[in-house]
Length: 366
Image 1 (cartoon, helix red, strand yellow):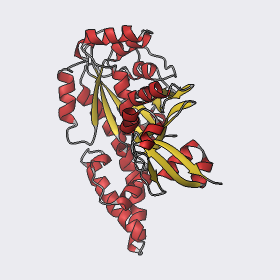
Image 2 (cartoon, helix red, strand yellow):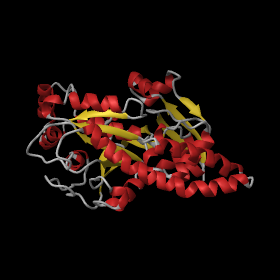
Image 3 (spheres, rainbow, N blue to C red):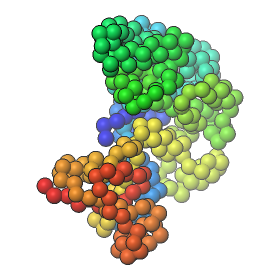
Image 4 (cartoon, rainbow, N blue to C red):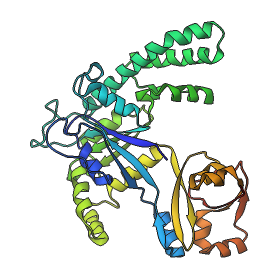
């Protein structure tokens, strides 16, 4: 899949440190603004215990996980919409992503400068939001007149678009992001998607805390939760400095011991990668056998032929049917033959909507 998440935020909030932890790419990390100038793109594996369990049962020659693309984008400052800092370059880089990972500084440290002098994650969030909202308002204003004119001339789609643009304009003028505007039907969802508005992208707020707050959060995290409670957004608490230390530990046992000492069940980076995958609206189906166990990425709601096409375009073009095993059935019966004997293997046609965790085998003819 070509979908990707962009890591955004003010300078010096921990974006590049997190990117280094989660990505195969390496972004520079330093204690001064605009350390990152060009966006860094990295692809990282999506941790999935289900794939590990399938590999243990099948003992394959290869195990291939799903991946997700992450982009580390330069820090934004107040006035970016008017060209301040890296301005339009920053906004253009966000526009090219499909979802936003918004990093907020939620820790005190006199040795790390803050671009505005004090630590206030809610203020920082509002600075970024305002710059994106200003740019979106510009986009809406440039489009709304044309839609109104075409709608009055009898174009039903443009008339519907005009109504949507009016609602977006009202929200933006009130300092709200476009994602807070409810969409009434699939047609509006399609129109909204084609506008490519910055504040309409799904967002996850990542609260970067000190080591002691990694498990329970702190007053800054509480303030962020209160500030975003009316948004359709998730919050993840993570200690970037701790994650950087974890990333340097090679032994799995040593990493678990380190996490236990911090009171954590798993690395925050694992939760972040999995969260980014879901934020993009992605899900996984598997192929499993002696040669290979593999996690394949599709969008939620994709049907069987589309999933087949992820493996090879010929599979989709000549799709006949799919044989589907539910993950838990495979774990219970341990082999495909046993699942088949128990009558738990389903044969599905072109209209089957693939479910997360399905184990699939495709029959096709070209």
